[in-house]
Image (cartoon, rainbow, N blue to C red; front, side, top):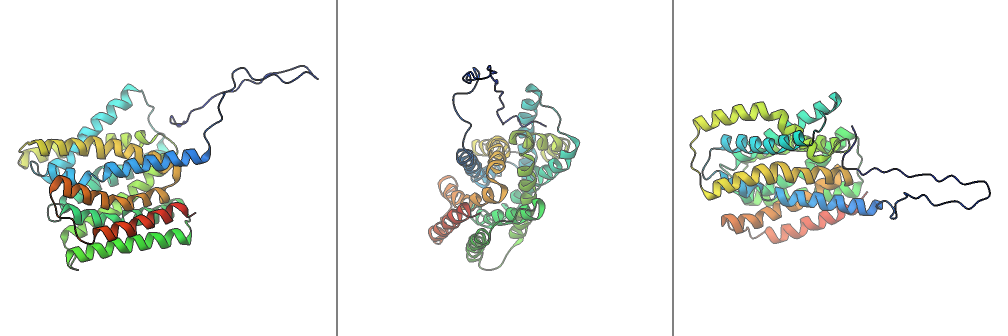
Length: 322
């Protein structure tokens, strides 16, 4: 399938008589194609925007849980996002993906549309937003490892060293906050890391063959029969008390985290590579900590500034390594 995000053009070849000066092509573009550095920079920016959107996911989930049950939150956010994505696919008359891509789309649906939202939402019933954010800080390393297995990528030793240091900082922070005893919420969060890393890896790979918004769009549509049925069951069995917080949180989860954030994220991964894009997520737990203080009134852990500095150094190293 042609990648609709890539601009294509044609150049007219001017034919001149032997010995005559070569004529300039009348339709030749006046500017050269974007340099590789510019494309990489744009990819990094898109991935960073995706991370910024994801950093609000846990606070938005906490808001949504104020008026809805966990299953209601997960299913409704996916149904709303699928409505937006499916409408865009229909209006733009996007062709159905080739058969060879559907297995990857199913992995994205299982990991990003269903698995990660459900597991993290259940975890947030017993874990604070700040604690969950730090544990999920292991996602970059998990994604890089999954990418190495799935795509055959071989990042440098410097890359892996910096990634492991960043992961160690995150683990140490989490252990210090939890008192050294992982609970049920931590187990749910670790399971969420695995399924999300698989979804990110497949989504980043598919984004090289189709626009990123179509990757998540088709994944949402594929999961729609499950999410519609799940939403109907959840609404009939869980209490519903709509408030400004719960509605605002749900809307952000559906349109910000579940769709727009993933669109930017997959396009960014396609441009700069899955492993390098994943390391930008080392900043996500720190951003979420800030949001948890500003939006939820949670107390910022004393070790957060030191962890922030260490993680940002790791990001700088991984982005410069090859």
